[in-house]
Amino acid sequence: MTQPSAIVFDLGKVLVDFDYSIAADRIAARSKLPVDTARFFSEHAEMLFRYEVGLTSTPEFFEQMRGVSGFTGSAAEFGNVFADIFTPIQPMIDLHAGLRRRGFPTYIFSNTNELAIGHIRERFPFFRNFDGYILSYAHGAMKPDPKFYDVVERQIRRAGKEILYLDDRPENVAAGAARGWHAVLHETPEKTAAALRQFDSLGV
Image (tube, rainbow, N blue to C red):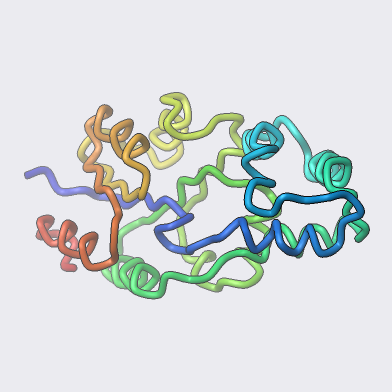
C-alpha cells in the first residue's frame, strides 16, 4: 500500500465539536425581533453559505444577521456570541500531536468562516500547529466542490495516495477518494485511530 506523506484534517466535528444552537440562543437573548432558535440558522442558511465562501464580508454578515434578528449588541459582541460554540475533541488533538512529533506535515481543510477561525485561533493553541490552512471563505469554494480540493493539492504539493484525508461528512470523503486520496470517514476518535493503523509509516 502506498503510504501517505501528508495528513489533511477537516476541522468541525473532527478536531472541534460545535453547536450552532448555542449561538442562536445567545442571539435570541439580545434581539428585538422574534427568533426561532431551533431553526434560525437553517432559515438563513443562504446567508451563512455566502459568508463561508467569502461572498459576504464579516461586517456585511453582521449587518445581515442584525437585520433578521434585531440583535442589539455591537459587531464585536456579535462575533463573540456567534463564534463561541466550539469545544475541543481532545483524542483527535492528541492524535494530531502524535503525527506532528513523527514529522508528518498536517493541514486544515475546512468549510468555515472568518469569525469562527479567529475565535479558534485565539482560544485553541493546537490550531497553530499545522503547516497550512485551506479555508472555504478564503478560496470562494466549499467541500465537496472539486475546485476546492484542487486548492489543497496545489498548496501542499501532493496528490493521490500521498494525501491522507480525515472528514466526518461522507460526501466530502467521497470527493477526496475520487481523486485517489486515502480518505477516512471520521466517526469516532477510536475508529479513526484504528483506520490510521493500516498505514505502517504513521506509527499510530
